[in-house]
Structure formats: structure tokens, C-alpha cells
Amino acid sequence: MSKGFGFGNLMQQAQNLQEQLAKVQEEAGSRTVQGSAGGGMVTVTVNGRLEVLDVKIDPAIASGDDPQMMADLIVGAVNQGIRAAQQQMADEMGKLTGGLKIPGLG
Image (cartoon, helix red, strand yellow):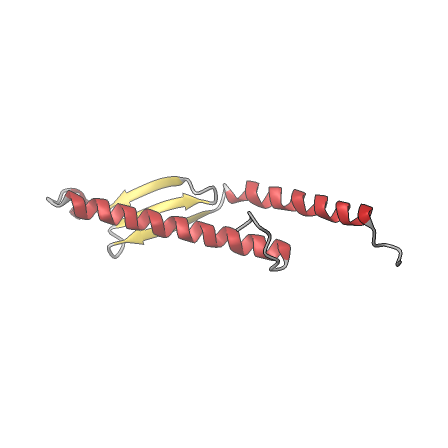
């Protein structure tokens, strides 16, 4: 059995990884991405915690007579923003774990 590898070492590595993951998740809240729909008529800003922080709607559709179209554009922009935030988090986690797929981490 080689020295330097043992249960204690493995537990220390797991604890270090857990601390690094917690730090990445905490930092995610300060990172933002944008999603848009309708050629930019609706733009949303989403953070790494998947919270919608801002919604911008072009006045041309806000005063329009098709509320369903505006609703569809808002949904599309929010979904695009969420996907972008999820991808950003997956990329960060991938850097941390060296591409190792860990269940529950994306």
C-alpha cells in the first residue's frame, strides 16, 4: 500500500471539493446572464441562482394589442436566460471537478 493515499487523504480531498463547490455556488449569485426573445423586444437578466433580476420590454409591444404575444416573448426570454445561467453554472462546476460528472451538481 502506498503512502499518501488513504481514507484520511480521501476525506480531506472530499472536504476541499465541498468547500470549493460551496464557494462557486455562492459566487453564482453575483453572476448574471441575459436572455432575449423577439429580436430583443424582451430581455431578461437572470443570476446564477436562477432568479430573474430584471425584465425589459420594448415599448412597441408593451402598448400593443396582443397581450398573448407579449406573454409568449416574456416566457421565451426567461427560459433562454435560465438555460444560459444553468450552462454557466455547469461550466464552472466542470472546471472545478475536472469534467467529472457528480450527481446533483448539474
